[in-house]
Length: 367
Ligand code: NAP
Image 1 (cartoon, helix red, strand yellow):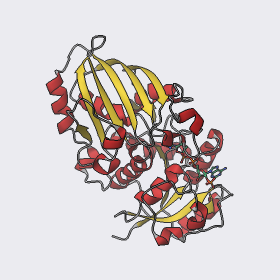
Image 2 (tube, protein in one colour):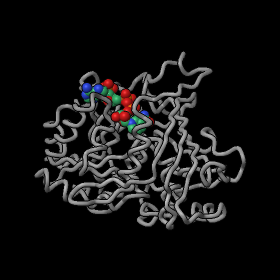
Image 3 (tube, rainbow, N blue to C red):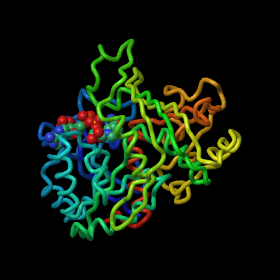
């Protein structure tokens, strides 16, 4: 199979660099189009990221030689697509929300599907917000989205906020087995890389914790309800439960968002042993479809009292697994646990690539 040519919008940023390095030698996708702001446009990728490459992983010479395009120049991307040199784009842009909305719409209208990390389209009612292990069926809204907008080949699919899968995948595994979750309290401890580069000032982060991340608590409380929702009348209708109370903190960790969670079940309550067994045995669409970026074990259960920890657990299964631990009774709700996932891989570029693989497997992406 010849590889599918893909583009990365925002390729020079923190998430964009993760896309570029994770797509090195991808079995299905080949980076063929790179775009960022007008500041980077016209330079080779190597020149554009010189002195601001943030990762230990690198990029290949072919990608380094690509000329960075202006992401606002949709006509240029359209020309590449018309010549068969671009099948879809990953969007990792950081700019004004309304500008991203307009731009992602323009790509989709030009026949170029957009798999996005940006928050701009997360609340667009006919745009699926995918965690491939939880709601792969939400991809079924894509033909309805295309019909409503008059788009032939283009569409928009997004992924949620970077901290959510560290607790939503374990919670979904329990819900899927018939255990309703009524209410939950989640406390997130989020890494500095989640704020992009240069991100939070070092004077705010060294020897410190900041108990506020703008907009993050609202996202943590509401996005899970869309993910758990159902397609109805061409829109995704939100679930009503669980009711979530979130506390989001920025902590001096480079990568890896940790969440401590207390859960209240409905009438049917699983034992701690049942929860552990459900988590260990959990497999979902990415594993069943054999998607290249899928973790073999989506939920890794650690028994040690002092795990998960970001520096030790964030890279589990290609940094795509969620690691859980500290499962124990909760004197206020029913149970409590800690969850961890890599924010710029699983929570950003890796999660986006997995979504694209899912969409390809479902027949929505390709030339
Ligand atoms: P970042 O490091 O600031 O990178 C921003 C990218 O957008 C750069 O490539 C930049 O190009 C480009 N850009 C900025 N202004 C532009 C403009 N006016 N026109 C075109 N391109 C422009 O941001 P990031 O942390 O990678 O985040 C990217 C997106 O992913 C954001 O929407 C963010 O909310 C989302 N996200 C981030 C994380 C995370 O863990 N960091 C997780 C999930 C989602 P230049 O280099 O040329 O300026």
